[in-house]
Length: 435
Ligand SMILES: O=P(O)(O)O[C@H]1[C@H](OP(=O)(O)O)[C@@H](OP(=O)(O)O)[C@H](O)[C@@H](O)[C@H]1OP(=O)(O)O
Image 1 (cartoon, protein in one colour):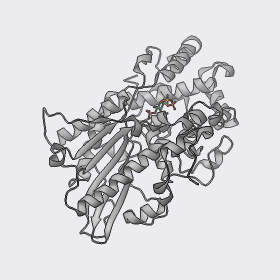
Image 2 (cartoon, protein in one colour):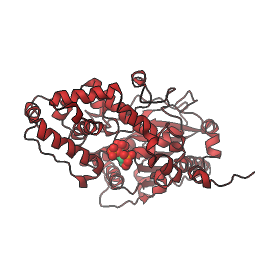
Image 3 (cartoon, rainbow, N blue to C red):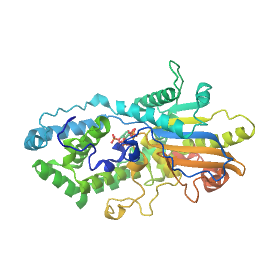
Image 4 (cartoon, rainbow, N blue to C red):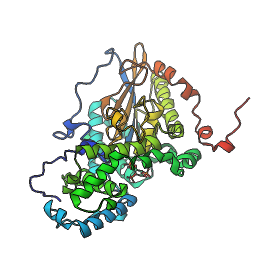
């Protein structure tokens, strides 16, 4: 798989890998220079603005498949080995060994460490007055992580990137494990009951598997493998897609497994992945985004505090880096009203949704990151938002640097409400609101 003859480096379908996609496909300029930063970013409205605080919420880096998916991949591999050895021969896979094991269980790959080490250096280059050696040494750069191994190891890699950038050796900088913030979905009873444990919550995903578009993908895979149509189920097609996506993300190789999909097939597979995230982590159910109220308030409380502290002299926390999951970022971005399509994503409107805003692989690829930067300007505090190092305009604003007060006005209802305890209480035990 590492040295396939005449296979171009990047699979033609690499932009459709969804949340199994590389960060580089979102920012292709990084392929030639992994430390490049986008120099052509919009400028602040006035030159007397000073960066005061930066918050980054970041997904872990490239990881191995979860145990659940390794099982599907093993099942598919056994099917191909027993019934499609000719195909394996034809695409030079006959010597290929199934190298995925269940104990990988979503652990961070070496590429995932590099993702974060490089991201840390790019962010330090982009924000030289906030991510400084002085702030790092004086504990004004705070790091918070999910307890999951892939996030802790991403945090360690991020810190290593900063130490490399500042030529620091041998020092240890601490981080805080905080699942209430980074894995809030695990502690939201209403989300667990109404979405996580409710199979009807993902009905659109299930229904999509029975649509003509998806069935055509299964048939084409079966035709390529010369196996019966009945052998290729949604799980088998997903496993085949993962053989292609993970080989590329983890080993940067264009695996022959990718030859089981053409563009049309990959777009259907991406939509199936987007349907899952839309209904499990985003606009599909209101509790998805409301389960991130704690994180929402944490971000805005800290922005307010930094603005106040700056006016009174010393900002105690210049930078906060919070490392979590796709399911940490997607609910928060949904609460902020970002990437919302007019028409919800459903099983029956794939064809009309080709131009949709909600494409999880463009929003939360491995190492996907939301960065909020607070500036102190003569006219007041301004807030800059970037996603995956690109400028992002918040809903209802027409500038990349809106006044913080304007942003807070737009989110006033959430800032005054969005009470995690109340939102996550199971309906029959919801606390009585004061009359
Ligand atoms: O389909 P898998 O098992 O990979 O789904 C994972 C999630 O991966 P994603 O769907 O986002 O690519 C994983 O999110 P991550 O950001 O940590 O990679 C999540 O933590 C894991 O529980 C699985 O999500 P699921 O909703 O439980 O299927």
